[in-house]
Image (cartoon, rainbow, N blue to C red; front, side, top):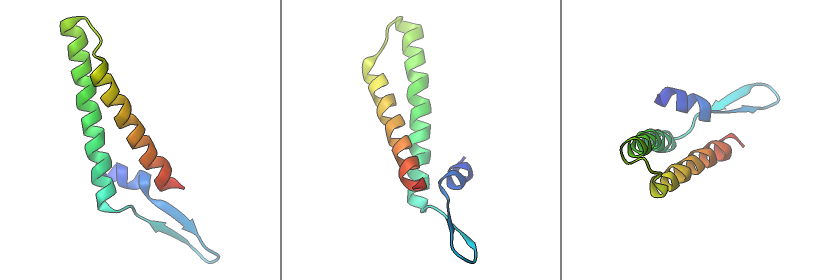
Length: 80
């Protein structure tokens, strides 16, 4: 999964003579990986909460929304 994240965050810079690929730092790759795993875990937790209690948990949904915003912000800032 980290190789997919690394590939998605790699910038391609074009100069007059050639194209250069600038890979992201390992810190950013690990941060996106951790946020993605956390997002999956919180989504599973929300589904289990709705299945067991038949109610929506707004705190878990707020955490999911925050992680989605973080991951999206990282991708947007790295690609520009």
